[in-house]
Each structure stands twice: as C-alpha cells, then as structure tokens.
Length: 426
Image (cartoon, rainbow, N blue to C red; front, side):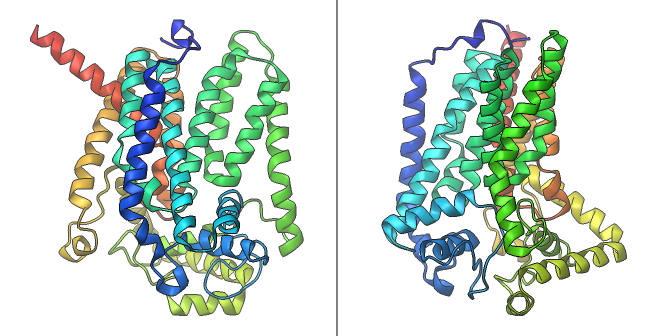
C-alpha cells in the first residue's frame, strides 16, 4: 500500500518539465501537419469546431450563447459554456474561423494535453511509486490518442481531461486536510469541470465519498468539509442554471443535448457507431425539424421518439448498448468491408486498444492484489464514467477524460508483468 509513504514527497523530478516540453513539442508538430483540416470552408466552416465553433462565433459576433447549427435559431443550451467561451475569446482576439485562431486553439489543446503529464506523474507516484510515475508520464507524452485529439479536434476534450486528472489527484491528497479553504477549492474545481463536461460529475460521489470515508476512518471531521465543497460547486454552476431558466423558462441544469445523442445512437441503424442521417448537422430533414420546432420542442420530440423506439425494440437496444461497451474499450465496431472502407484505420486502433486494455486490467488486478487503497478509485472511475455513453452514443474521444488513469494502470501492469517475467527467467 503506497499511499501515505514517502512517495508523497513534494519535490518533482528534474525530468518532468522535460517530459512536458517533449509532449507539447510533439503535439505542436502534429498541429502543423493537420491544422489545414480545420480551415475547410465546407458548410460555412462547419469542421472548425462543429457546434462549439458555431456557438463561439455567435458569442464573438455579439449574438450571445446561440445558434449551434447553420441558421440563426436563437439562444441554446446545446452544451455547457466553458469551452465555447474560450473559443469565442480566441475568435475575438484572432478572428473567426481564421488560420491564426485554428493554430491558437489547437496549441491550447496541445498545452492542456501536455500539462496532463503532471497530474499523471503525481497520481501514479501517489498510487504506485516513482518508477511507474516517470514511465506513465512518458507514455502520456507520446500517447497517440492524446496527440491526435489535441492536434485535430477543437472540442473540450483535452481541457476536461486535464481538469478531471487534477480532481483525481486532489482526491488522493485532500484526505490529509480538513481545511475549509482546501475543500472550497475542491468544490470550485468540480464546478468548473462540470461546466466543461458535466459527465465528469458522475465520479463526484465516488471520489468525494472515498475521501470522506478515509477521513471518517481516521476519526477526523468530514461533514462540514463535504458541505463546503458542495456549496462551492453549486456556487460555480448556479449562474449557468439561472441563465438557462431565464432564457428557456424551465429548469435545464447543464445541457439538453442528451436526448439528441440518444436518438443518434438508437434509431435502428447499427451499421456504424455514428451512422449519420439522425443528426441535424448531417440530415437536412432533422435540421429542418430543429429549425421549425425550436431547440426545446425538438429535444422533447427526440425524447419521445427514442423512448418509444427503445420500448418497441428492447433487445436491439440491449445488443447495441453491449456493442458500444465493446467499442469503447476495444475500438471494434464491425469488420464489414463497407464499414472498414469508411474507417480504414480501425484494425490498427483495435490492436492498440486491446493491448492497452489488457495491460490496464493487469495493473488493476495487481493493485487489488496488493491491497492498494487507491484501487477502488481507479476501478470506480473506469466503470462509472463511460456508462452514459454505453446507453446513448459512443465514440472513442468520449472516453478520453479517463485515459490518464488507463495509461497509469497499463504502465503499472506492464512494469509488473515485465518484472515477473524477469524473476521467472532468473
């Protein structure tokens, strides 16, 4: 059980800044190679951030948090505000849909991803020691998924990944503190992360609950601290809730796009994980319906349709839910020639995903076998975070916020496996 030993030393190794710099440089090289993809003028620059880019353009143009698609449809609660406002700030400073704005945004994503090396190192050191920490930081620096997503996708993914990694790290450390200021910061960071991607809140009961349990076992106060953290979280997210209520005259806590995601993933077409034709950005009929009904009524209609569909075809829904589970962890959806024609890199991705999965499970098993107190946190995060995507709509980037934990466990598993083999050979 490593947590609580001298591995909690506050110093950082001299190699960590170098690892971060290498990670950042690798990502910037990838940006230089692929950034022209963002400048494709197709459908009025739709590939530049998709709905995020549209909302950011609306903000930067003085029209507010609105217009997520192709027409001026008015205020929206399509997504949470943190990343669209960041993109809007870049648009205001460097121009809307310009080469400079693309480079700045992708460089920011690359910076978020490179900085994640730091919590990866610190989490791994808290859990499994210095050797695993250094190796895990290097793996993250050169992790293909992290490089690709930071260099080629203007979305909140890399920011959320950094924020959630910091929350996991704080969860490991705050069990040693009952100071209200520390717990206020903890709750504040949860609120900020929720405004980036509210799916992260699925881990709040497990991370915060684990910390409170650890304090309780030591006979230390935890109720006041937990209350302070929750109040800080509520304070951060309340202005967004109020805005949504004042705008739409009903309670919309974070975003209302979930029923559209359910409809896209559960409409009878399972030929592809993203079959197309069910989203307003890819279907003229859906776009017209969205424009005609307005966002609230459109989402309500998608809810009605998807609930009715699942009730009429429960076995199909169960099967596709299982397929999304498999796809999330292995990258496998189909080997049909038609599918592979549209996804030619899938075989290589499957090999890498399966290798990562096996090593992750080896590491998790080893952590439980050694009675590592952090094993529960890893396991609960891996189980809980992707659940919403199994039941609605899944794509590989959606798992990325927990990829740092996967990399740490896979590194720990690989080191242990190699060590065991070496001992057997001796």
